[in-house]
Structures are given as structure tokens and as C-alpha cells.
Image (tube, rainbow, N blue to C red; front, side, top):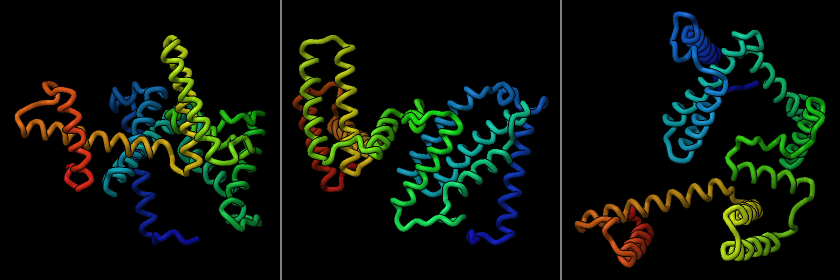
Length: 277
């Protein structure tokens, strides 16, 4: 198997892993860091989520050095979990690596076994079939919820659930049907805003958002990426407005709605011209 790394380079990787394991052991030892010793699994779960999000931010906006740093922070939280389990005699990092290694070999029979796969779709179907078999054996449950953890950000969870539903045939045959559904949900939301209370409006707004996730899936655009781009665009334009008002001796707070609209249009034009920053 080719890895792109020479044996000395891989030995250095192993040495760095041993160093990190030693650092974690020292931090959690009786004479280590009181803060690290006081952490629980639930505490580390929060940090794990934070660090995963920072990795995603770095992938979108950072340099390779930024990604490298954030991946290190995320990996350290994984070491934290493994160390706490080792202290309680449950499993250690070696068990974690062995389990995922076996899983990857098992789910790639076209690489490590005698399986055949002509297309990427063949590979996906094989992966899903093996995964279902594993889950059935472990939990006796084939629910979509298994593959859509509650802790996923809602847009990502909705995307994953609708994608799974589509794989078993529960989907619109074309994007036109999804657009009609979005329009239907928008009308229901408008009606609810006029007649209903907050709980009903929340339900209708959720239905609209869920339909938009379906629309984004049919369009081949991930809703998280689309929303991320729109947020950044808004922030860039808003920052332009702040700078422009400041250069004119004014401020957003002291400006009229007409002035704000004028500056917003100016920020859009500046973005088109490449001058927004």
C-alpha cells in the first residue's frame, strides 16, 4: 500500500502521537492540570462540537496552516475522550483506531476484498447496504434517525434525512414539484402570520425551511454552504456600510431608512466592482 510517506516520516508521525498521548496522560494525572482532570464527557462533547465547527470555518476561509491547527485541536478532543475511557477500563485510543480501521476495510470490499464496483453509485450502494447490516445487528433499528444525529446542525440534519428518504424512493421526481411545495409552504406561512399565534407560525416556518432544504438538494447545492455564503455576503456589505457612513461623518444608528437603503445599494454596486472590502 502506498501512502506517500517514507518509513522515517511515518516513524515521526508515530513519535508525535506518542508525545500527545504522554501529554494527555500527564494533564489527567493526579499531579497534572486540575481543569483537565475536572472535565467530563459532556464537557468535552461541547468542545468537540466547537472544534469541529472551527475546522469547517478554516476549510471555507482559512489557509492550510489554519486547517492544520484546527485539525490538531479537534484531534486533541478525541484523545481526551479516549483517555477518559482508558482511565475507566472501557477502551483506549488503540481500540478506537482498530475499530475504524476494520470498518473501513469492511465497507470497501471493492478495494480490500473481492467486491466489484463499476461506478461511484455502486460504491455508495454497497456502503449503505453494509452499513444497514451493521446497524441492524447492533440496534435492530433501520430508522433514518440513526444516520441523522440530533446534535447535527438542523440544516445538515434535514439534508441528511431527506437524502436518505430519497434513496428509498420517497422524493419528488423533479425539481418542479419541490418548487411548488416551497410556494405552497410560503403561502401557508403567510396565512399563519395573519391568523395564528407563535407556535403555529413556528411550525409553518419550519415546514418552509424543510422544503427549502429539499429544493437545495434537488439543485445540487448544500443548504449549509449556500447560507454560509449569503451570511458572509451580508456581513461584507454591512461592513462596507459602516465604513462608508464613518467616512462621511455619520453612523448606521443615526441614519434614516432611506439613507440605509441608499448605502445598501451602494455596497451591492461596490461588491460587483470588487471594491466591497
